[in-house]
Length: 101
Image 1: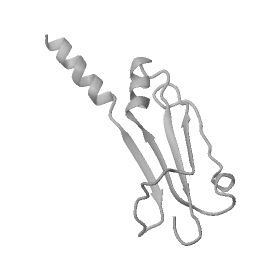
Image 2: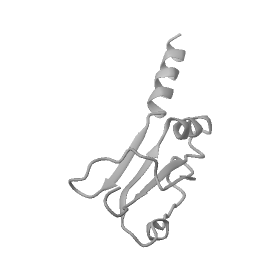
Image 3: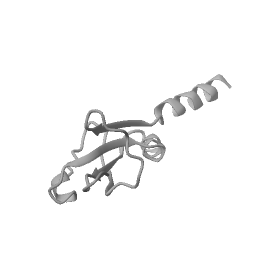
């Protein structure tokens, strides 16, 4: 019984969500639909793999209003069932528009 409980606790800890949000200082978090969203592939617990996003291309030369990367529950679950061999991350970009976001 203790092994099952410890396994459940470990699974919950490993599948936790993480988020990194980048935006201009003093601006509030944007919660609307992003202009761009994609899942990027990483391997071996995130140690292998490289993802690049061309924000200038996505936003048509305008500056981004907000960039966010996250490891969602689904991303964590995929990493858990593959024992970290496949460890995806999600990426989102919001572009500045005239008169606000």
